[in-house]
Length: 422
Image (cartoon, rainbow, N blue to C red; front, top):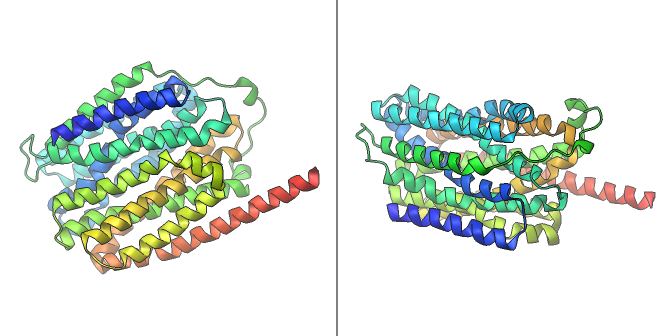
């Protein structure tokens, strides 16, 4: 399996080189493309083995998803400091702060697995989340690295595509390193391997340069956040990304426990479903630039919402591996469309001088809701079962359809105003 990891890293480097020859973009984009999957592997590892490991260490099995929840809460808690640090000290300083936090967190996770301390593992998971908040800000660093606004969907798609590699790296690292170090329930060595990947990411980012600031765009008095938040486009962007992310986390968090612990599917089958899901979250980024060109963002948003509805139907159809696999594959694709739409729309709601506080607010709301969703996933799963996890997601899918309708109405209104002006 170590061979699989080496192949994945080699493919990451080859893909970065090939894409850099196809798309003429700043070097920062390609550095982010390479380093992001290495550090983002922490999240798939926690999602994959966090619940399984915690169910062995925790006194109450219903708390098995608590580390995942705390990781996401850490992302929410770190989102505002990450944005403010980037504003005051620059993106590169913020990046290294986040990478350092992630490295320390992974080392703590290693000792928590070795000592079988559930509380320490929870603390490490939260620190991984705080480090992850800085990683999430990398998409904004990528946007700022290009002064051409028309390149934003393309840049986001390229950066999201790199997540495919974290989808395979994370679970493979978890399995390969499982028994590297002696520990009561295994997986201590997995975190040692992850620490090495984070160190590699830190070395790559040495070549990163702070994105240029367009001083002409920062002139003017920034508006209050409550004024910005009242804009329809802000509400549409935040709701689309937040609901899409929270629902994805809700179903994904419950899947490994439902499959492995409740339905008796093997660890390899569970790993394959999670890997396939995370790959499906990012592979569509190969095609989304063209989809945005022909369908526009409103079309992409509608398709993403329809896919979520299909996910619910498949997930309610049975408990076989094929049901979980198809549901999680489509869940990843739907998430990609909705997250890309929400992130692409967000810059339309703020001026350059307002970007840091709006980005921080967006990420705080997004990951706070995701954290609540992941915690509820464990509670609902252990108390009511997988079917009720799916059933309780249906009202939020209906809310997404409402947001889609609101966006279509908003776009139609803007078009009419432009016609009247001309």
